[in-house]
Amino acid sequence: MAIVGSGGAGKTTLANTLGAKLGLPVIHLDEHYWGPGWDPAPDEQWRQRVRELVGGERWIIDGNYSSTMDLRFARADTVIVIALGRWRCLARVLRRWITNRGRAVQAPGCPEVISFEFLKWVWGYPSGGRRRLEAALAAHAEAAGIIELRSPSDVAAFLASLP
Image (spheres, rainbow, N blue to C red):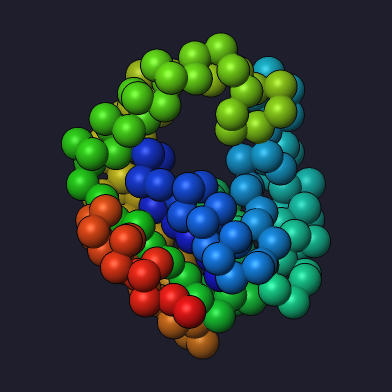
């Protein structure tokens, strides 16, 4: 199961909830991409790491990282797209920053920070990020069921529908 969506959409929260409910291992891509001090993994090393992460039989993986969507979507039997509005996502990002400022919550050695570039990315996700996502889904998720959740109530209903 692959979970994607804008920053602040709730990917990590949904992944953790699903993992606990379904008894599946959860993989948070941020923990594998970022080194201490927000040092990104080199491209080929990153792709190799994702190949290893999705090599298992059963998993829930959350994160965007369009450069590796092909690897994840080709192996996923379900892709969950959390498509909340940009204002809600921005508010959640800001709340996460205020609540966790200075603590490493996304990845070890990476204290919570906020930047104009990240806020701009969150704001632009419904257009630019969504286009890249749609292209990756069309090209690599032929066998996957795609579930789109557009609101917190959609997320709650989806979780309630699971055994």
